Image (cartoon, rainbow, N blue to C red; front, side):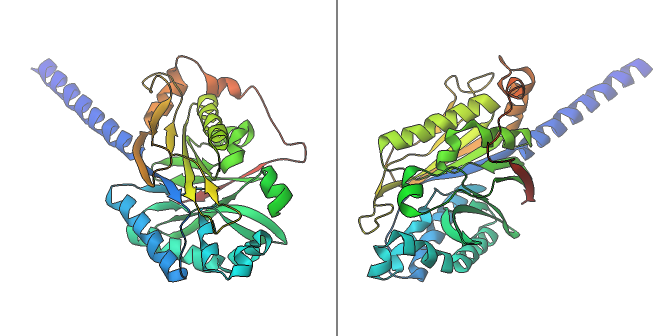
Length: 326
């Protein structure tokens, strides 16, 4: 009798452990919406706010918990400026910086209202005299932090005057896991993603703005490489379509995509999901972080572990890491 009771007790404990494990796995899943975003012309700031809320509401209604907008999606705000500023890409930076507080207040209110995390479209800002490309991140408690772009493209550097930011990376800590951001050209280099993943990130977000198939392809190749090297998820969001009124972002080509490492229990080609290029809307997908843990623990190869043997640094100085809680 005692033995029989012991077997029953063990089985009951095993069931409880299985149920606890399942609940923990669910807590480490998140549904992400990645935007294929057209640069839209607006009559005024309220028109832009209404447009933005429609996008956020659509993703939230469909179950998204994390919303990723693309690099320079905020450039559509240039459409509310006068003709002179519209046509002067350097003056636009200062005009957009003047809207920064209202821009942030809009996304903060939407994140609170819809109870989601929003990686806002990146926007040029001016800080201590430097013109930076910044992606703000908002959660249910408001502004959580931001990530600035490190590496400038030739257009940004030679024509627009956008500058390389101070070398600080942010790891965002959400209830379901940690993530970091590599803006467009940054994801084409291993350094940032490696440091973010070494600091605990299992998801790298790559908001991007490209005008050609070649440009978009470079970003997607970079994102896939970073997913492979770090045995992590990477997600790309890109601008699409034409904005003929904007000399800075007049032509856009891109598509949203979710990538991971092609390894144990993952898609054979490492492609979780992609959307048809140049079609406006959200690509929405659930990602599962315990799968990343298992690949890093017992995958076919140990890219993440072995990459730790390779150390990369910037010639001009150290990269620092900060943590922000959502």
